[in-house]
Image (cartoon, one colour):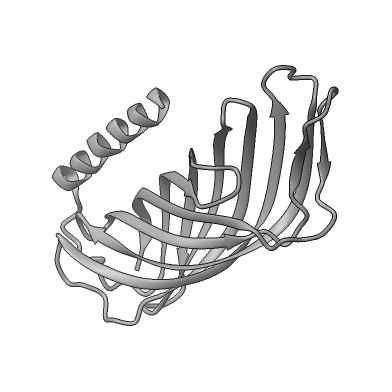
Length: 205
């Protein structure tokens, strides 16, 4: 938790420094751009419980209506002080802007999104860390969000989306000698993810 709080502090300081040193060239309606960003995510409404994570992303914009996010996240969930559940998401999303791009700072730009990621999960028994199991899978996601533009190059972005796991989940079998196993069938379970990120355009035209 302290690491995430420090990350937010660094991102906020970075955002304000960008506001002060922003270029005089107006890049709000650039048709092509490349951005880098850092992000923090809250995972909710999964069988694992509530967890928090952090990660990074880069953004490639192809025109004024379409953008893409390419991201990697690490999410940690404590299941009732019994199991540590760790997720790694590596994937992409397409962002569609239904409205025209803003022309000034301190404005909001909404979008819809859909995408896919590779999903890794490892569960470890806290009472005996030698008991663990992991799996790889795939997961599509859909949602919406908005950019809050600090300058024509810097933004704070909020995303809410649901990610569905297209794989069997890992379950704890509680016995005299507990162990993990894959569920007998795919349950199409997933997470409700809320992500906030700070991004900066390194290139725009």
